[in-house]
Image 1 (cartoon, rainbow, N blue to C red):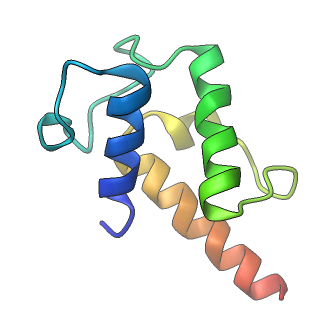
Image 2 (cartoon, helix red, strand yellow; image 1 turned 30 degrees about the horizontal axis):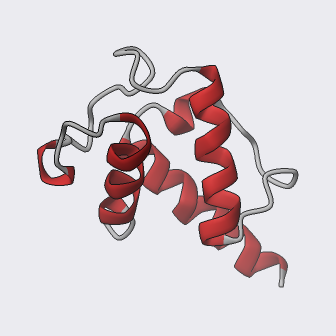
Image 3 (cartoon, one colour; image 1 turned 120 degrees about the vertical axis):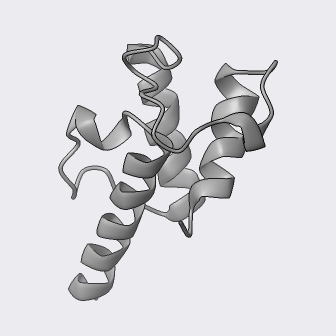
Length: 87
């Protein structure tokens, strides 16, 4: 996945300092396992805005889009395609 490495590095740095990025599974449910809570979700969204230039006012913010590294990567790809299509 194109974005997995940077997402994993962010999640480990912010929420799992005792885990290496390589050990974080792409499909681990970050919400259900208590790794990211509601405040953490706001951090993730702010990071996506800063890192990838995603305007979260213009995309659907479904919680399922943030439950795993894989789903966050899909969200970034989708939002990037939408932004490119609007340009």
